[in-house]
Length: 338
Image (tube, rainbow, N blue to C red):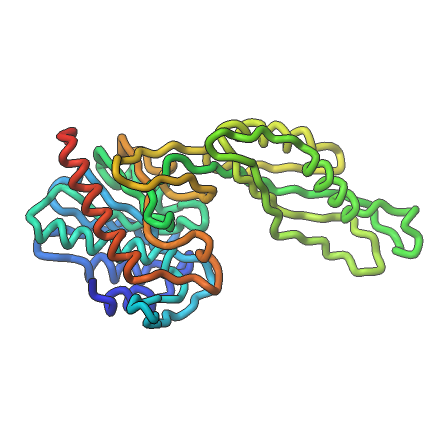
């Protein structure tokens, strides 16, 4: 595996919304004499790229975009001789792009065909690219989606549910709070009430969790807030996915406005013998691509450093992932289901 090629990918800022340049680089730079590159407009200025060998029935897929901010790559040789590559996208998901592409090259060199590499935009901002794939790509039997799973095959993944909440209050001079009704204190009551909800614990995916962001109450410190807005994002399980929606609806009243923005349902994935397995709590593109009968999820790198300023990946992990992808292809061909 040529590390310089990986660094070239990392040097391109493909923060969500800016991934068009990386898409074009991969479409043309990854082409071989035996592959065909197809480029599809997503509709928001970004592109999906589909590199095909023959008529693909097994397709490797990952995303082009990264979360901001862009962090340039840095290479460090470790005492054991391994190489650590840091920078934005190194493990989420340019490490997957690089590993999958090298797996495709190895399969080509060994004379295999009927596989593809599908690179989609916008995974980090709602899977915009993945949602257009079914209308662009013919589909096939197997889709292998790349995300940082420590190269373990995922058996199941949590779903997501997103809501916008507006809490109304009554402003007053902060020296006379009895004449107002603070939206901030109503927010505190909202969170305390939510903390007391006993969501069911799923036997496979465990507990339901949530995170609050985009919290805004623009009142000054000497005025009680009359309006507070925030987003709340749940990671749901098979046991709690519907319950989360019911709970949030029950919180809505004349002072609390709850708007649902959808999400993904929890998913099960195909796994193959001989691989370590795990479950995951993060979202990915697989639930939005329905033109493949079977879906798998695995890739190099750790989700625990993705989206952080500590994001990195080891060269050895990408080499192992490349070997895993080749092995997955050969195991699927060996099933004689194609």
